[in-house]
Length: 330
Image (cartoon, rainbow, N blue to C red; front, side):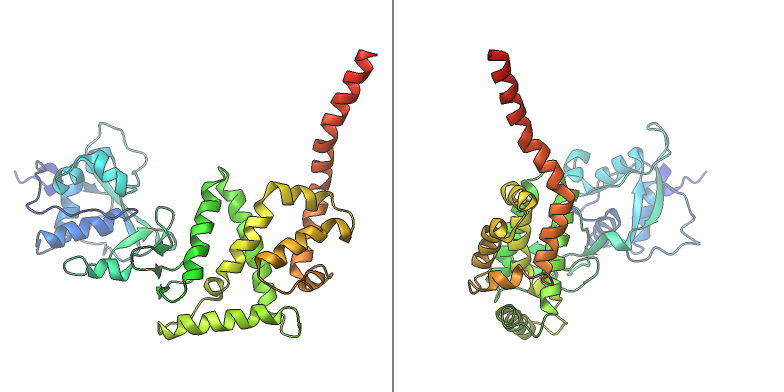
């Protein structure tokens, strides 16, 4: 009786492969197969577990992930020649749901094209064979610090050399620090999107004397990036330093409180002056930012309407407590 590959005992392969942080299971599996010179790379996939769909009738394409149950994960670790815990430190290893912990090894295929991107091309070139490596967005940085490359987003799948733009590298370090400082990542992401909307709207204002320095700055920065690559430069990358400055301000609890409780311009003036200083613009630009048709002013008004009562109630609470104590003492 011939046993299927997944029914045979798992043995470590002659050559091990170091996993890349955030790498997909399918990417790592095929790298492991190529390194060990398997004639048919899917042979190793067949050896992991019983497939939910026959691989004779199903072609594994790019941006499709291999889901493994616990038994199949153990077999992958054995083939890789390393403990499963070590493998999990680098690979997300999405689990196959709906299988018992003691069941036989099983595999399944899932489309994940919107969740992954290519690994840094310069890093891949340093690996023998220059293999294509797929990485999960959520488990990896958008910047390769070693090679100073921007690795793209879900919507902008290009890689750009940032060696000549240190201000963008600094901006991404500040962005990462901003996200690490807050437990609620979704909230920070929402504020960051609001900051990005402000800079995007500023880039469309072409008839304002006050916004001209920003436009010229972005044009010069885009020119530097374009000289280092042949791909279109995403506007979000060009405007990242200014976007991070705005995001830091609108995430700051002190500024959020002051803006929410400021009824008049003279109470908001410090906020606009702070933004102008951080953005390295003329002082008079603060008046343009406070105009009713300016995107920053729009955010200020929305924030006031949404959170004014919240901050008012919070600020009034200590006063009520102190008043109650004074009445009790009388």
